Amino acid sequence: MPLSDSILAGLRALLGNDQVLTSQEDLIPYSFDGTAALRQMPGCVAFAATMAQVAALLKFANANKLAVVTRGSGTGLSGGSLPSRDSVVLCTVKMDRILELDRANLTLLAEPGVTTLAIADAATAAGLFYPPDPGSMKISTIGGNVAENSGGLRGLKYGVTRNYVMGLEVVLPDGEVMWLGNKCVKDVAGYSLKDIFVGSEGTLGVITKVLLRLIPKPLAKKTMVATFARMDQAAEAVSAIIAAQVIPCTLEFLDRMTIRCVEDYAKIGLPLDCDALLLMETDGHPAVVAEEAAQMERCCRDCGCLELRIARDDAEAAQLANARRSAFAALARVAPTTILEDVTVPRSELARMVRFVEGVAKKHQLRIGTFGHMGDGNLHPTFLTDERNHDEMRRVEEAFKEIFAEAVRLGGTITGEHGIGVAKKSFLPGFAGGAQMRVMRELRRALDPNGILNPGKMFD
Ligand SMILES: Cc1cc2nc3c(=O)[nH]c(=O)nc-3n(C[C@H](O)[C@H](O)[C@H](O)COP(=O)(O)OP(=O)(O)OC[C@H]3O[C@@H](n4cnc5c(N)ncnc54)[C@H](O)[C@@H]3O)c2cc1C
Image 1 (tube, rainbow, N blue to C red):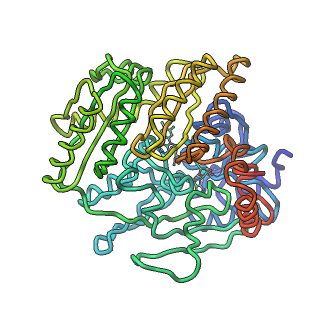
Image 2 (image 1 turned 90 degrees about the vertical axis):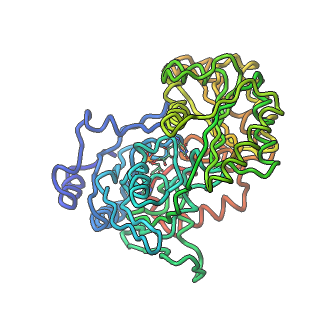
C-alpha cells in the first residue's frame, strides 16, 4: 500500500519537512543501486541527521509495520539497498561526521555516512593507515562497507572491513540503541554481537556509529605490472607468489577484454598485446619491500610473463591502481547492461576457475570481461549484455548458475564481498544448507519480529 498522508506527516514531524522526499522525480535516483537490471520505486526517501532521529524513525516504522531500507551511497552490487515496494528508504549520507581520531589508541570514530575515502584521508593526515579500499571508495559509505563487510584491493595482506571494526552503535528495529565493542584490543565478554552486524546487509539493525582500528602507515611500497600471453599463466604466477610465502598488499588481475576497455577509458599506456595483466604492490619496511618485489618478479618470469614494469614513483603507482579501480566503469561503457559477478575460490583453484569462466562464455556465446582480487581468489566475471535481449539474459542466467556451481564445487563461495541482497538469495540455501539457514532466520526473527528491516533481502 502506498504510504498514507498521516504516515508521511508522522515522518516529517520526526525528521523535518524537507527531509522526506515523495515526488516521483525525487524518488527515481533512489529506485536502484549499483546492481544491473533491478529497479523498484520506494514510498518515500527519509534523511536522518542523528542517531536519535534514526531511533525515532525505526520506533515509528515498527509501530506502523512500515518496511525500512537503509541506504548509504547505493553503490552495492547485490541489490541490498534496492527499495522494497512502498518502503521508507532511510538514507544516512547526512550523518557524515568523523567524530574522533584517537592517536593513543589508534582508532577512529565516524558516523555511517562518511565516505570510505574520507576515512582513509583522515587516517593518512594523522600519519596512520586505514587499509580497506573497495573500488567504490570515493563514494561508498563506511556504514555500507560495514553492512556488506566490504573487501577491496588490499584484502590479501590487510583483510576486509570486519578486521577493522572495533565497535558499533546500532539502532534495533524497535528503536532501542546498543553500543557494541570498545577500544580494547582484547574483549571476550559475552557473545561477539558486533560481528553479527558486520555483513548483515541492513537486515538486523541500522549502524549509526563505527569505531575503526587504524594501523601504522607502511614506510615504503613498490607497484608493478606484469603481462602474460595466457590467463592461466597469470593465475599460476599468483599461486607461485603465495606458495613462495610472499603476501603482497595488492595482487589484482585484468583479462584481455578488461585491459582494452580500461585503456580505452583511462588512456594510461597499458600494454595491449597480452591476455592477462597482474597489478602487484608490496608495502612495509624498505628492505622487505625490495626483497618481496624481487621474489614476485622471479615468480612472474618463471611463469612466462611477457613484460614486467615497475612504477617509477607514487604518481605512476596511483595511476595504475586507479586504472584497476576503473575496470567496472570501463566495461560498463561497452554494453547497455553490465552484470558484475563475485565468485571466490581457494587460490590453488584459480587457474581452473579462470579457464571454466572462459569456457562458459564460449558455450553460451556471451561476452565476459574478468578482473578481480586474484590474490584473494576473488574473481569478478562481468557480463556485457543487454537486459532488453531476453534470449541473451536467459543465457546469462544459465552461465551464472554454472559458474556458482563450479566455484562451490572447487571449495569456493557464491560471493566474496558483494553480499547476497536480492541478486543471490535464491543461491544461498543451496550454499549455506538447512541448519545455517534456520539459525539465520531465527536470529533475524529475534531481532526484527515484525520483519521491517530490508524485507526480502538475503532470504524471504
Ligand atoms: C565501481 C564499484 C566498485 C566496487 N568495488 C568494490 C570492492 O572492491 N569491494 C567490495 O567489497 N565492494 C565493492 N563494490 C560494492 C559496494 O561499493 C560496497 O558494497 C559498498 O560497501 C556499499 O556501500 P554503500 O554506501 O554504497 O552502501 P549501499 O549500497 O547504500 O548499501 C549496501 C547495503 O548496506 C546496507 N546499509 C547501508 N548503510 C547501512 C547502515 N548505516 N546500517 C545498516 N545497513 C546499512 C544497505 O541496506 C544495503 O543492504 C563496488 C561497487 C562499485 C559500483
